[in-house]
Image (tube, rainbow, N blue to C red; front, side, top):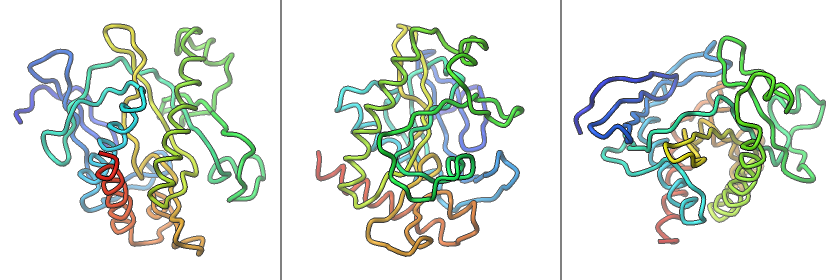
Length: 245
């Protein structure tokens, strides 16, 4: 598929225009970063793996009446998406204590939360993507106040559906990051990606704390076998989608 003007290049993806102004082309990269890009590397085949996982999960979520920007995949590492204005907030949903939640609160890793925790972070690399309060979101005018409850409700609905889907893949959804966008019709859409880059995923078949990790924590913590872990997620997700279809 022909590529037009490059609109944006991030740490994991490149965004291009297409002949249709309401459709963009996302090219997923093999580049890997962690700790706000302080650690860099490559994960062989990651672009295509994450693209295919995201496409499968967006298709599933779409069937559950969750609007997404996903259209189709012309190539294994390419995704056509609806053009949206990205809300500059990263929404993190947590089901089990891990990562920064443990460091900031003292909760032990692996503690199951009584109910899902929804957090907001400012999508700003220069500031280190800081945690936001509701009042700070409105102070910075990051989103229309009427949109925030919609984002919260949508994030919780996505979490409920993804937990069910991953559970049938024998994977525990620990936590994950979401991004949202607003299209030309003012609809709120799930955007960006859902993949081992943006989720913490633990293998239900494994009991060893390190062996069970199936996400970018393998890269962050130098655990090795990163490609193998990503491939396992891809295989299980696509197999589950095939069964659903």
